[in-house]
Image 1 (tube, rainbow, N blue to C red):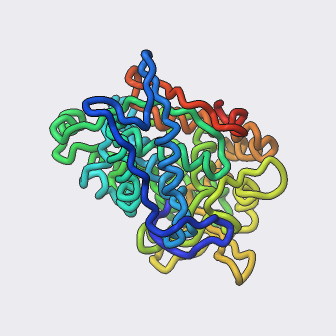
Image 2: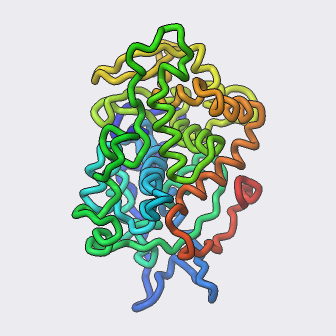
Image 3: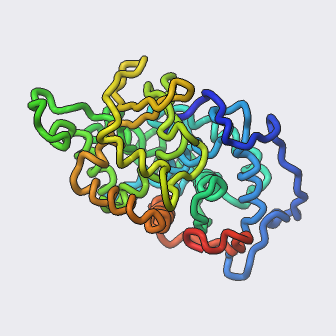
Amino acid sequence: MGGGGSKTSKTTQKAPRNPTMASTARPSGGSGASISSSDSGQMDLTEVRADIEALLSDRDHDDGSYAPLFIRLSWHCSGTYDKTKGNGGSNGGTMRFKAEQADPENKGLGKAIKRLEPVCKKHPHLSKADIYVLAGTVAIEATGGPRITFAHGRRDYSEAEARSVYGNKGGCPFGGKDGEVSPHGSRLPAADMGAVEGCPFEAPMSEQEAPTIAAMRSVFDRLGFTDKETVCLIVLGHQYGRCHPEISGYENPWYSFDPTHYSIHPHGLGYMTAQVMCERGYREETTTKGKRQYGMRMSSRMDPFMMLITDMCLVWDPEYKKSVLAYDSDREAFREDAAVAWKKLIELGCDGILTEESTPAPPGRARQGMW
């Protein structure tokens, strides 16, 4: 997912510039007044969620919303898990460290981290590891997606602890021997691993783009996800936001009609329609930075629609495509399954340490997603 700044969407409500958060008095030596705890350790995160939601709208950022960037931050904090090595994921909060922010796949995320700093300071009894992944969860809900219950309890590793866990000087999962699935040595999925050289033009796209398909499947298998869950997570995340040539080399939004809201509509058009039709209506193009992507222009008055090579692989690969078509036919099932897949993603590497929140579902949202 892309980061950085660009144009402002007319569909997004705008908040005042540089919104500030009201101060809350904290009892000395205990939990802040904004969070109530039960004897079971459960926390009511109503105010934390509200404080994050208050930071989403900003007329000076991108299409007017930080939601896409918060979702990308949460994804990238979590998507480093390795089920074989037993490390990575959101626990430890290693995105705080310069070494992990130096992963080229994480370029631009420092802006989201800075944006969330007031929340971290106001609610110090939650780790930054918790807040970084809660931010994306809140962003999904606040923009029309499913309400997903959150489990808290992640720790922020010290640099010494992190170096011990990962066995490297940077104290993070970046910089290992993962170059087979990413040209950057990142554990995060790469957007394009290149086409097969010399592959006949008439060969199926699943053969021509086999390196990217194989890398995608390898990354999600390492995370512990099925092909069906892979489709859920990619489509859920990529309906939001845009790519930025100065950040990733790619450009334009995935869903130009509204890049700041959940748009897998139960009926009619929406991002799922774009995902299904990309095999027919999109054409390969080269960005101003020399990157391969696919694009479709609907009108000269709006930005073109964009798909990364990984997005195209969801319709080129027969197994991925089965799930795409099934979810296009049953978008309520996608909403439910995507909520489950997201919760699984942000809890990778957190076995045995998390406690479900006791936050009551807001009126009108109790039937959404996992509530």
